Structure formats: structure tokens, C-alpha cells
Image 1 (spheres, rainbow, N blue to C red):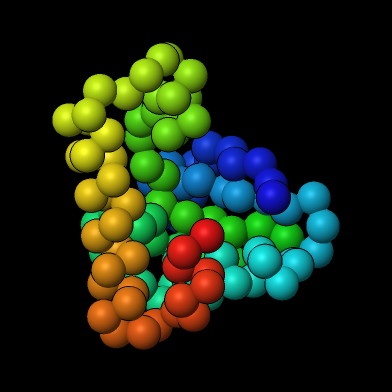
Image 2: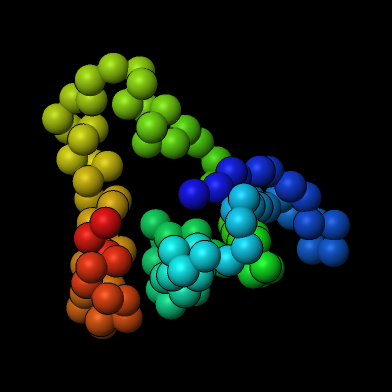
Length: 106
């Protein structure tokens, strides 16, 4: 899908995440940009800019879910916290129907 890089926005003096696609905007990349822009939730990063093959987003510090999974089995209590963090913006989306259900359930 793409690579994510940490960068510095010199105009606003903040660190950002830049997601770069190897190709020009694909349909999937465009859907991702629209999904991020359509929702406002603490568990969804803020989208700052969109280019022909990149997204500039809020930088969220911490390990990825993939990195956490590589550490070994996730205890039930921790898994429930993670599941709630994932489900909360999806529930908001379904309540307001801002995104197609098929995209929300990927």
C-alpha cells in the first residue's frame, strides 16, 4: 500500500507522518484519504494534505499493531483495549454513515 515516513513541517513547526504510495493515487489510496478526511475521532489521525502519491497526516507516536503482535500473544485485557480503540471510530462511522460499510469492515 505504501511507506510511512516521519517528517518535519517547517511552516507549522510540527512533526508529521507522510504516507507515500509507489504509484499515483490509486482508488484505494483515494478511499483512504476520503475516509480519514470524513471522520473526526481521537483514534483517527488528522489529514493535513494530499498530493498525487502522498498523504500528510498527524504523527501518532508509539508502536504499530503489527509491532505489538510480533512481541508475542496479547493478553485478553490488552486485546480488549485495542479492540475498543479500533471499534470506536467504526461505530461512529456507521452511526453517521459517512463511509461505505464495505470500507469500514476491511
